[in-house]
Amino acid sequence: MNLVLLSSTDSHVAEAAISHLIKHMPNDFHQQPVVYLASEPDPHGEYFAPIKKMYQALGFEEVIYLELEQGFEPSTSTALKQSSLVHLSGGDTYRFLHWLKHRGVDKVLRYLADEGKPIVGVSAGAMIMTPSIDSAVLCGDENNVGLIDTKGLNLVSYCIVPHVTKPIVTNSTVTNSTGASPIKDLTTFELFQLSSEHELLLLSDNDAVTVLGNKQQFFGEPQLLRTNSN
Image (tube, rainbow, N blue to C red; front, side):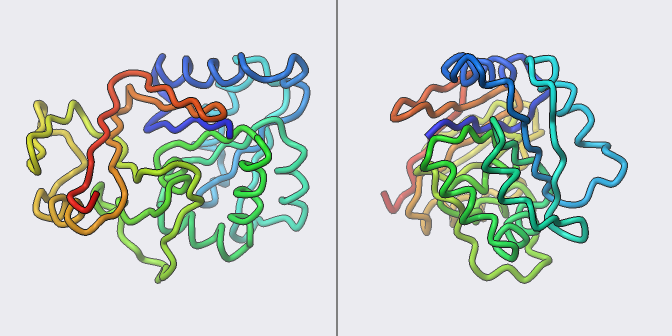
């Protein structure tokens, strides 16, 4: 697999991680478009525009916007297969996964990942790449779409909490040096540790993870926690 998992794209670390992936791709990699898969409709391109600019700065001429709800195109699967790279955007994690499953795009993404298609996931997009999005409750996401099956793409072995600011973990206690952590309820966090069968990766906006083949590399200081059930 060829993956990048990010909390945010607004850092030099994020650019370094994506560049690291690109460096390991074929020379003609930039000739095919990047496909940006929106977590929810973005009619004015508020979130798409800066991502498009980022990929153009990295040498890609074409960046295609696709969405899953009202603007869904039957040709989405073909566009994903013909892309150089798939970008899974941030947003509402439950809503994003709901529509991925509803459209059957989750199966396409899993197939493409197994075939080596590079996938970059940011925040919600990164959580969707994990075994389960259940960790989304730790950063305040609510299941407002009635999603029952919260299984993710299972491309990595751990769950993710993005946007954590300088976490300090001692046993089962999480504190934060700035008070800006998305983990608002430590009791919920501790219960998650007790019940989860997966490790938990805490990512700040200055952290990133790449997975190239069977080699994983951390950028910044991601913090991988074992849950009590491991």
